Length: 160
Length: 160
DNA sequence: GGCAATTAGATGCATATACATCTAATCATG
DNA sequence: CATGATTAGATGTATATGCATCTAATTGCC
Image 1 (cartoon, rainbow over the protein chains, first blue to last red):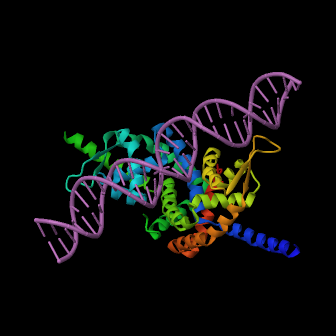
Image 2: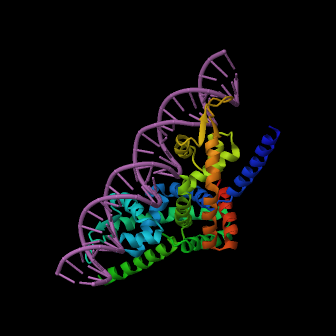
Image 3: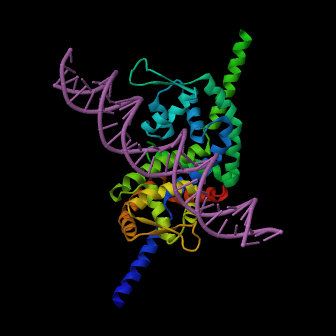
């Protein structure tokens, strides 16, 4: 019994050390910060009817338009099946058009509509506000460095 | 018509500058890196039957146990309604137990079960593997700095 | 003590995320 | 040129995420 107790205490000490180690989880760090910041963007972009991810998705499509889902998914480091569903509300809202592919009939054409462009232009000042608030929260200088590190993470992990 | 064309070109130039600006979106940077890294952790933790977020949630509960949902949600920078649902699969799997609160009957008690502790211990080597892979992808030195910046984001934005 | 304000939790709803899997189209190779 | 392998997209399933809202419990204030 005495030995059993000692063993439990030793086991507990190891377990607690383990939990301390787990606190440094990179995945948690990224997800947690992502949640906190996403709330800022979602809230700021609400008058434009967009969530943060939708704004970025729209901007990426605008950059590449006309393009195809695979290219967009790569740019977003997003699974192609996730993109498939994330396009839905934007297509339903008429901001993006999906057309059958011409050359390769597997690849659909993804294009920004006039309404999509107008929405982006309307959303831009709201986005700038969220961007500024985030920058101020983390510290002006640090945000640029953080952004570089984040991009390095995506490149280093192979993106998708 | 000539003037109209010129105006469109000027408008396009502004629009393109706008899109360039939007590429620096902090929200996109965080979400994109979060997606890429989450895939690594989800895949590595699969033999333990956990996703990355579930591992962290379990570890946070283990750290605080016995605790309550509000405390856990704050630690995760997660909305309390999101936590409510994220606890479900862990409770269903018997890793976490939810009991009615004693002192304040609004606050439920969240405790790590023996099975939950065993699962955490089993998952730990898998988690270390994912953590190591991520560190190598971004560069050893940079990961510590990145993690500090991410925590500063959470603190600076008020967490939840 | 009694009632308004607050807090904790759950749920309806909509979107976000990815894996496994299915179909259609294209490619590669014999 | 025929056929097996690959690629693109969609869908089933499960989890993740947060807002609006509802109920129950507690707190604050008179």
